[in-house]
Image (cartoon, rainbow, N blue to C red; front, side, top):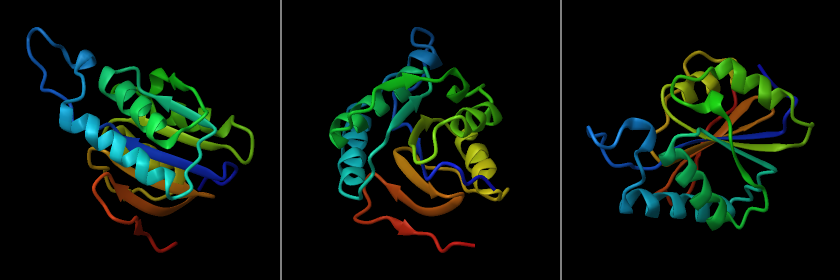
Length: 163
């Protein structure tokens, strides 16, 4: 279990257009619905005292757009930065190491893809059964414990009982 960072937010990107021969996977952008999902998720996170000090995203277009829309809706002062290890073929262990390198008390927001986000969640909470995130869903981990999961269209977070 990992407990040096106070808060970690795992967020899966919002709904994106399908891949085509002309539009390859890394360049898939958010749909109109996906843009609305990201804005609504950011707005809800803002009202639940989520104040990231660091926002890292996969370099893929749909994740970058999701991170920027969420940050805007949250009125976050942290810059959105790409972390290549959050890409679909990236290493959850490398992301966990980057999180561990942050100063104690940091609130790290990570925007990425499945199944790597659930693998990262499993590493951070020390539980191999960390469930995958739906599109435009957030999970909050505090001191190595999953506290809640929150979908873009949820009225309130689903509270997760500590183990």
